[in-house]
Length: 74
Image (tube, rainbow, N blue to C red; front, side, top):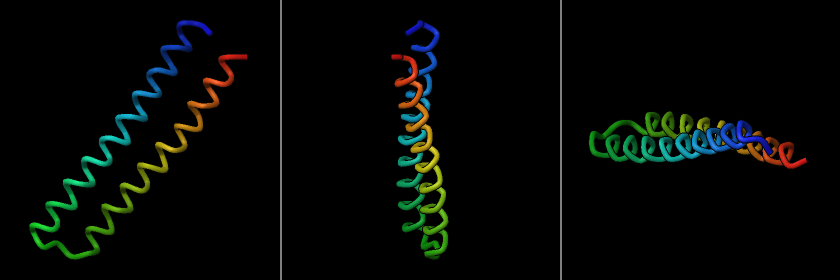
């Protein structure tokens, strides 16, 4: 495995981690603020869908990362 491939794999892993962590932080803050301000449930559902979309995006990237790692070994 080349050093360039290692860097690409590491960068993709960091990106995935940041997407997951950022999504959870934003989702928790949005839920808390929405509850405190009395926002309707449809706003909570909207934030839930945004979080779900971000986690699906992260899942797709995890699959790509696993393929990158598998291809770099052989």
